[in-house]
Image (cartoon, rainbow, N blue to C red; front, side):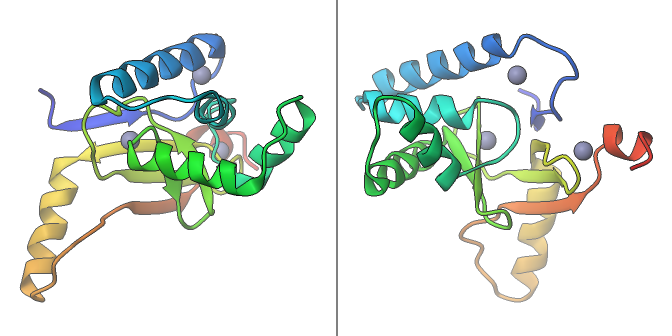
Length: 165
Ligand SMILES: [Zn+2]
Ligand SMILES: [Zn+2]
Ligand SMILES: [Zn+2]
């Protein structure tokens, strides 16, 4: 197994996003089946809305989108669905943006490192063992125990800085 995984690169320039969406939903279904959990219609709908593109999505945008459809749902239902998806590693919350991104690697719970583009909002996700080991080592020196080590790094993606914005 490759130790230093790129879980998701920055958004592929032109691609058939339907395929990403479908494989994410399929992976979620399989994950829930194997874990004896239910991907209820609202959970699936919320997951689809997180996966509408490769950019982080805010909870209120999901609520807005649901309102446009016929299946309007109360905010607590949507937040519960997001909590469920987050617990199962199907989405991650980017704390600094207070927004969610889909993860297509739910099989193993992992800590992630995110590169976040300030200009277009695109996100890349890594699960890099070198970074994790380094953080562990540094934390150890302080007698600090890491509980949650999501790393969020802001900047400009290649596409944005090359277009000179
Ligand atoms: Zn896509
Ligand atoms: Zn992930
Ligand atoms: Zn960008």
